[in-house]
Image (cartoon, rainbow, N blue to C red; front, side, top):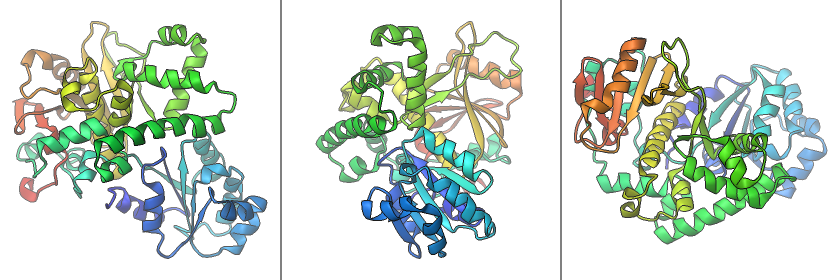
Length: 416
């Protein structure tokens, strides 16, 4: 399956001497590396045959390999990055010479920023987005977040052949490639449990050898209940019998290993009292539902976490789509002291765009007051309400409703 990031990776390879693909384990980085490395020799640092000669003398290894190369699982050898800096500085215009991947390591970005600042392009590889599972090339989403897009451009957008049951399947099982491709519920259940165990017992244990693995597993399970909510550090600390600083460290680990996404509060130029605490989501809905013991959509629709789960799916779909196209942005959420909320605030070259997320088909006008007020207060170009309606609807002058099926569909020249 072609990944939507492939064009962006090729672009970065023409800009930077080194490009690094980062992300959680089992998101398809190694497969992508092979697809992009037809003319490169690939070295896998999980193989001792490849690891040992590089680890013994990284500088010598890079001198001996003058042609473009690819290195998989680069986080296993932090000593590689200073050697890369020296090799790159000998010819800064040799763009695309090094293509690396790195998984589940908060220290990886630190190593890159310390050694390769200005020399490297970093691209995150997430699990499949919904539009990727349907092999959509350029989606409506990437057109909406274009600096030239107006509400009149959005109104004619339509859904392609994406079916309701395909959205439901993706929502329940998430986007990790292996379960999606194997396409069996039992396999998804077994694979996800093994993935969770490997994440904690291998990745976390190797990165943080002094961490209590049993307690951290319990913490990840607690996060499922907090997905979509503002984190209460005190409550989690009390349940786990640890200090609040320890809980904050756990959050940083979960975020740094791409399991959890923190959304900071939007507090810029606000006229009202607003929450300043972050909220967050487990980034893959399949992992969330596995922890919640939800296997089928029928169970999910009656689950207390249903609304938060749907919010997480839509937020990840939007952010993965923007990342894949290289659209720069900062993501927030917004909540006033009076309880008015907007699920997602996106700020970028396209302006400031609030996004409200509803699982329902019809949306009560009264429930749109927070996003409508935000649009007016900050003079946003428009506000977007993602729902499960049958078509795009205009709620008022600067507020538009769009089904998820339209958001992730192939962009049509109909709107030009």
